[in-house]
Structure formats: C-alpha cells, structure tokens
Image (cartoon, rainbow, N blue to C red; front, side, top):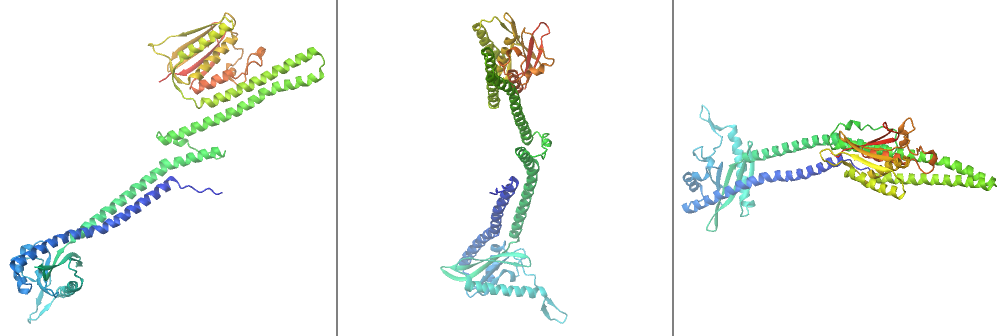
Length: 509
C-alpha cells in the first residue's frame, strides 16, 4: 500500500493563508462595490430634501410650471440651489421649462456652460467646437431625461449617473406633486468627483494593505521555513536515519548553538539518541558478558556430568556432584542478578528525582545493617562522621530508593571484607558544590593495580567464594551514581590496611 504523502507545515500554512486571502478578497470586492452606491445614496438623500423644499416653495408661491414661471422662481430662490451644479425643471410631457445653466446668474451660484458664441468681422455668428459638443451632449441628455420621465419613472425618485469631460455627476429626478397632482418634474444634478476620489483612495488603501500583509506573510513564511521547519525536517531525517540504521550522517550539531526551543529540542533529541544508543550498547555488552560468564560454569558442568557416567567410586561421584551443584548455583546467581539489573535499568528511566537528605538515607541503611549484624552475631562497628556547615542539611537531587541501594551495596561489600571486631567508617564531607561520601573498611584492601576493574561487570576478587557473588554489585552502584551526575572511585587506605570507596554527588541547588 502506497503511503499518502502528508503536506508540510509550510504548505499547509500557505494554503490556509491563500484561503483567508480569498475570503478577504471576496469581502473586499463586495465592500468596494458597495462604497460608491452608499456614497451616492447619501447624495440622493440630500437631493430629495432639496426637491421637497423646492416643492413647498412652488406650492407656497403658486408657481406655474412653464418657462416664465420657473424663470422668476429661480431668480427669487437661487439660495435653494447654491450647493448644486445644476437644477432643471420639466413639464409633465418631459419638455424642459427651466435650467439654472441658461440663466444669467452669479457664477458663484450656478456653474455655467463653457460654450461661447464667436462673431466674425463681417458680422456672422457661429458656434465654436466646444459649443457644438456641448449642445450635442445636452440634446442627448434631454432626450434621455424625457424618455426617463415618460417611460422609466415609476412614481419614485430616479437616480442618474453620468460622466462628462472626466467629471462625475449624480442626478436625482423626482416629481413635483401638489395636492395629489403631478404638475411637473425636477432634476437635481451635483458634481460628485469626490465620490470617485473617496472610492479610489479606499481602493488604494486596501490594495496597499493587502500588499503589506502579503509581504509580511511572505517574510514570516521564509522565517518559518528557515528557522523552524528546516531544523525540524533535519531532526526528522536524523531520527529516521537512526531508525533505519542508515549510514548517511545527518549533521544536527549546527543547531546546538541556538538557545531557543529548536536548539533545546535538538540537544534533547541528540542526548536521548545517545542515551538510547548507550543503553542498546550496554544491553548488547551485558548479553555478551553474561554469555561469556555462563560459558565457564557450563563447560565445568558438562565435564563433570561426562565424568559422572564413567566414575564408579562413591567418593569421586560426590565430588563431581558438588561441582555440578556449585556450577548450577553460579549460573542461577548470574541469571538472577542479570535479570534484576535489567529491571533496575528499566525502572531507573521511569523514576522521578526529588530533593532528599543523604544523611537520612545513610542513617536508615546503617540501622538496618546494625540489626542484621546483631542477628548474625557479628561484632563489626559502623560509625558515621559528618559536620553540618551553618546547620544546613545535606540535600541532593536524586532517587531515594536507588541511593539507598548504593549505600547498602557499598556497606555490604565493606562488611564482607571486614573481620570480626573490625570498624567501618562512613564520612560525609562538603567540597565546593558536591558532597563526598567515603566508606572505609579494615579489610585486606585491593590487590589490583588498577582499582577501576572492580566496577566492571562480573568482576570479583573473591576466589575463595567464587559462585556466591555475580560481580554485578559495584557495577550497578556505578551506574546509579552516574545517573545522579556523580562519580565513584576506589583506593586503598593510606593510614591503615583496608579499602575505601568515594562517591561524589552534586549538591541540590
């Protein structure tokens, strides 16, 4: 089955932003389309108020809707239309009867046409080009308005929009109704270039905003890809290469210099990987060592069992059976201790460290051993010697039952080498940021040239008690101490005969 390729975070991020941009773009288009109608609607509302006021004045002044009546009305009420570009009046047949543009009024009140008449030397008068163009436009407009009055007007204000010489005009056509009778129509026209300017400004603002947001997203995407996604991709390739046991080396050390979350994650994965590799190597080494250790008693067991078939003397048979029994016990001890060691290794990774007092741990272990010595009728003294600085306890950060195991193993080892009436000393000293636990005995000391050997797996310097000890005790102690970021060493005592083991543990900060 072909595994479906999962899109990257960057692709998902870009697709999500594309979707958001599409939605925003749709709403932006709808918004831009609604800007101009809304602004025009505001102008129309103002036009309707002017038309209503004009109708009231016509009714009050009893103005007739013809050229003479409208001309007088416009001359007397010019203030009504000061804010407008043009006002036109039409009768019920759609013919124009009044226009502010054709009156000789103050130019500050109405905008007059730019058309002019030109007279030659011989007295002939003709229209210039602007006038011809203007008259053509006016005729077309008049025809459209007449058509609108007769065909399109539905007893509601009619809005007209047109652009002349790059000037935008908004016009409102409405009836003049007095006492329920329609006596004419009025067309209010206003220059509205500011509407186009406002729409253009908003469009430009939105476009600039969109471009700025797109630029920010692009920069963020590049940052996301370079500083977050790419390192994560390297980490994925790194873990996959380890999982697949690939020979291809993935270099993640370049991310170690980063102090952010990515750098911490990289260091954590690297440390975890090395720890797993270390555990795997240790397990393989344990298995190899165990097989080697079992091979010797198995060979002895095989030889003894073969001789049993050939030996008829009872004395020799008893001796061979004793060898067989000893070898079986040796194998059983190796397997038992090895199994316990593997359980300890697994449990160490699950247990949580906490703040504990090392003195309290030592006192509890020593009390148990003192009772055992009394039960075994052994006269071995165990003395504890320490001095508190500033009346402070000896706190460390660790696993309580594992540290108890360290003290118990070291104490048991010291007792096994001590003679009756001997003394075991436990000293605790504070050096810099560490506590030093020293256990001294009065036994024969170490015969090894290098005392580091005693911490190796399956090593034992008790030939007379061979088979009773697996040689894993001190190795387990070393592993626990190193788990607590500490160190352990062994040496012969300098004052008297005997051995001493020093354990260095960091203070709780």
